[in-house]
Image (cartoon, rainbow, N blue to C red; front, side, top):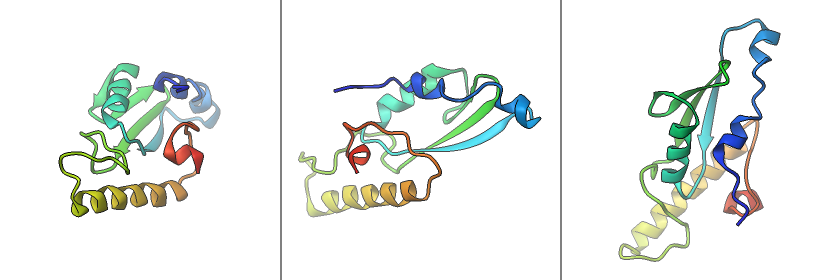
Amino acid sequence: TNYIPFAKYLERYEPNECVAKGVDTIERNVYVATDDPIVVMKEIADASVPESENIIHSNGCHRLTFYFNPTQDTVFHIDESGDDDSCFARYHRNIIAMADLWILTKSHTFIGEYNSNWGRL
Protein backbone atom coordinates (compact mmCIF):
# COMPACT_ATOMS: atom_id res chain seq x y z
CA THR A 1 0.00 0.00 0.00
CA ASN A 2 1.00 3.64 -0.37
CA TYR A 3 1.51 4.45 3.28
CA ILE A 4 2.08 8.10 4.26
CA PRO A 5 3.91 8.60 7.58
CA PHE A 6 2.07 10.65 10.19
CA ALA A 7 4.92 13.18 10.39
CA LYS A 8 4.20 14.17 6.77
CA TYR A 9 0.70 15.28 7.76
CA LEU A 10 2.12 17.44 10.55
CA GLU A 11 4.42 19.20 8.09
CA ARG A 12 1.33 20.73 6.47
CA TYR A 13 0.70 22.96 9.50
CA GLU A 14 2.20 26.39 8.89
CA PRO A 15 4.61 27.44 11.66
CA ASN A 16 3.99 31.12 10.85
CA GLU A 17 0.22 30.84 11.34
CA CYS A 18 0.52 31.92 15.00
CA VAL A 19 2.50 35.01 14.05
CA ALA A 20 0.01 35.87 11.30
CA LYS A 21 -2.90 35.54 13.74
CA GLY A 22 -1.07 37.28 16.60
CA VAL A 23 -1.40 34.37 19.04
CA ASP A 24 1.06 32.11 20.85
CA THR A 25 -0.75 28.83 20.23
CA ILE A 26 -3.51 27.55 17.98
CA GLU A 27 -5.55 24.71 19.49
CA ARG A 28 -6.62 21.90 17.16
CA ASN A 29 -8.83 18.92 18.00
CA VAL A 30 -7.95 15.95 15.82
CA TYR A 31 -10.22 12.93 15.60
CA VAL A 32 -8.36 9.90 14.30
CA ALA A 33 -10.52 7.32 12.52
CA THR A 34 -8.29 4.32 11.98
CA ASP A 35 -8.45 0.56 12.18
CA ASP A 36 -4.87 0.48 13.48
CA PRO A 37 -4.73 2.98 16.36
CA ILE A 38 -1.65 1.42 17.95
CA VAL A 39 0.53 2.40 14.98
CA VAL A 40 -0.94 5.92 14.82
CA MET A 41 -0.48 6.43 18.58
CA LYS A 42 3.17 5.41 18.28
CA GLU A 43 3.67 7.84 15.40
CA ILE A 44 2.05 10.64 17.41
CA ALA A 45 4.40 9.93 20.32
CA ASP A 46 7.40 9.84 17.95
CA ALA A 47 6.40 13.03 16.10
CA SER A 48 7.08 15.42 18.93
CA VAL A 49 7.69 15.57 22.65
CA PRO A 50 4.19 14.84 23.89
CA GLU A 51 2.60 17.06 26.50
CA SER A 52 0.49 14.06 27.52
CA GLU A 53 -0.59 10.78 25.98
CA ASN A 54 -2.81 12.45 23.37
CA ILE A 55 -1.52 16.06 23.15
CA ILE A 56 1.52 17.30 21.22
CA HIS A 57 2.88 20.65 20.14
CA SER A 58 3.72 20.86 16.46
CA ASN A 59 6.25 23.37 15.06
CA GLY A 60 5.99 25.63 18.13
CA CYS A 61 2.59 26.95 17.12
CA HIS A 62 -0.09 24.24 17.04
CA ARG A 63 -1.27 22.33 20.09
CA LEU A 64 -2.94 19.18 18.80
CA THR A 65 -5.25 17.07 20.95
CA PHE A 66 -5.93 13.64 19.45
CA TYR A 67 -9.08 11.63 20.02
CA PHE A 68 -9.61 8.02 19.04
CA ASN A 69 -12.68 5.82 18.92
CA PRO A 70 -13.34 3.44 21.85
CA THR A 71 -11.11 0.72 20.36
CA GLN A 72 -8.06 2.95 20.75
CA ASP A 73 -5.90 0.20 22.22
CA THR A 74 -6.72 -2.56 19.75
CA VAL A 75 -6.63 -3.17 16.03
CA PHE A 76 -9.97 -3.92 14.42
CA HIS A 77 -11.44 -4.24 10.96
CA ILE A 78 -15.13 -4.07 10.19
CA ASP A 79 -15.11 -7.37 8.34
CA GLU A 80 -12.67 -9.02 10.72
CA SER A 81 -13.30 -12.60 11.70
CA GLY A 82 -11.63 -13.98 14.75
CA ASP A 83 -12.03 -15.83 17.99
CA ASP A 84 -14.70 -13.38 19.20
CA ASP A 85 -16.69 -13.19 15.99
CA SER A 86 -20.04 -13.25 17.72
CA CYS A 87 -22.97 -11.19 16.51
CA PHE A 88 -22.30 -8.81 19.40
CA ALA A 89 -18.65 -8.31 18.39
CA ARG A 90 -19.57 -7.66 14.74
CA TYR A 91 -22.34 -5.26 15.82
CA HIS A 92 -19.90 -3.46 18.14
CA ARG A 93 -17.36 -2.98 15.31
CA ASN A 94 -20.05 -1.67 12.95
CA ILE A 95 -21.48 0.79 15.49
CA ILE A 96 -17.98 2.17 16.10
CA ALA A 97 -17.43 2.47 12.35
CA MET A 98 -20.73 4.36 11.94
CA ALA A 99 -19.75 6.71 14.77
CA ASP A 100 -16.42 7.34 13.03
CA LEU A 101 -18.26 8.22 9.82
CA TRP A 102 -20.72 10.51 11.61
CA ILE A 103 -17.89 12.38 13.34
CA LEU A 104 -16.00 12.68 10.06
CA THR A 105 -19.04 14.24 8.37
CA LYS A 106 -18.92 17.02 10.98
CA SER A 107 -15.23 17.76 10.49
CA HIS A 108 -13.77 20.82 8.81
CA THR A 109 -10.93 18.91 7.20
CA PHE A 110 -10.44 15.29 6.22
CA ILE A 111 -6.99 13.87 5.70
CA GLY A 112 -7.06 10.32 4.49
CA GLU A 113 -5.56 7.75 2.25
CA TYR A 114 -7.36 6.14 -0.65
CA ASN A 115 -6.23 2.72 0.55
CA SER A 116 -8.33 3.13 3.70
CA ASN A 117 -12.02 2.30 3.98
CA TRP A 118 -12.91 5.91 4.86
CA GLY A 119 -10.64 7.46 2.24
CA ARG A 120 -12.42 5.55 -0.52
CA LEU A 121 -15.79 6.99 0.49
